[in-house]
Length: 544
Picture 1 (tube, one colour):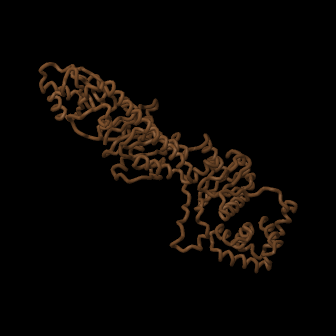
Picture 2: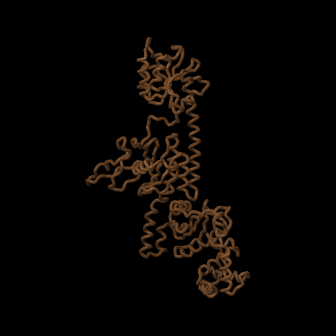
Picture 3: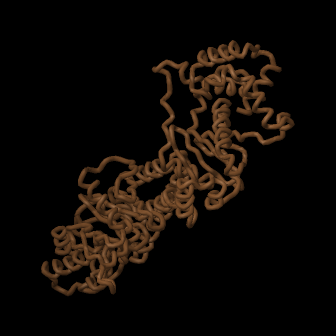
């Protein structure tokens, strides 16, 4: 394992390198390889002209060094050329371009032999090609590569943004990132455990090294000894000192870097701390490819920070205080101001069913039945809450319940079906929860993305609430003791007597709906085809 790095190499230019073969392919240059390996992986980072006998002090590495051989003394033998080439190789030069005329008519044979011996590509530059023309071609190819990289990075940004807007944003972002890097992307939780991952497996050694690298950037707890990002070579992230001693004699935790990188078995590893110290870390493992990959991974880290972190400062403490007060017997009406509002809406959400799936689930055979819609995980539920403008989220039994301040009007969310209650005070939260559940059932049955519980004045507003409830208890007494019957009757009436849509809303077979409605008609001794009967029953069902 190489030494863990937390800073970029300042000697590497930000522009992408140019393959040496691309220069050789330029017919206008007429360059010809006369010695050295024909490695397609050889790249040039810049072009430099020098007639110094020892160019080593003037090279940074990665250059195509251009020379007309002015420095070569008369009668120079193999020893001179071996020393000259060795200095270029030691400086990290990528290739040597030797210009013909006016000094030399041909490339010296001893220079060809030295380059072959030491593995340095040697190019013959014809008399018609100037060194400035070669340098210009290098920069032109760099500009083209840079433009192509910017386009690729821009497309990757768009793909990541689209993935973040999906119903399962965290797995989608990880999947998109792993595809772009042709590697693996992992989200580590505050305890260092793997929460979600995507991409091809790269081996146990790589997985272990990536988990250790994530520890380097994960914020440390007070007094915790953390891996030292500047550990010795060959050790990767190793335990280091916890930092200088405090006045009280206790060691201060070492500050964690925002990102760290390492290489294991030819696989490039990177770790990015997410958010404002909540402990989530993005880990990436992929073969070294393009310089733009770091930019793409950084964008993914920003998106994941938004998806996993707190959306508003101080909300965590306020929610904690509200929870404690409720557990200790506090009244919801008194606790609500801690959460940010006096009137609220309850939202029930469920993963949307595919549009082509229009029949009730139970009517399909196992061979033709589509896969069940997966239950939303905690991260997907949190992302939905963030989209609705609230961190008060409760995912359970395939349904996500969100408590949203009334000032924020819920909007349809891609991949979700939503039912929204009327705006109520905390005292009426249980009733709003029921409204949202019924609105969601109606939305699923009618296959619309969002249904809001109606708040328009109705005729039943003219009847005192106590009288309405007494009437409802009397009328519905024969079926009130069987919740399945009252729920089916309510849903069936709300959907205008549609058997199929009621079956979808209740997730039962339509024959079950028919049996329950027939049972209701018998117990109530009522003709459910009569619109007056339906109106009276609907009025009563609204008050139980």
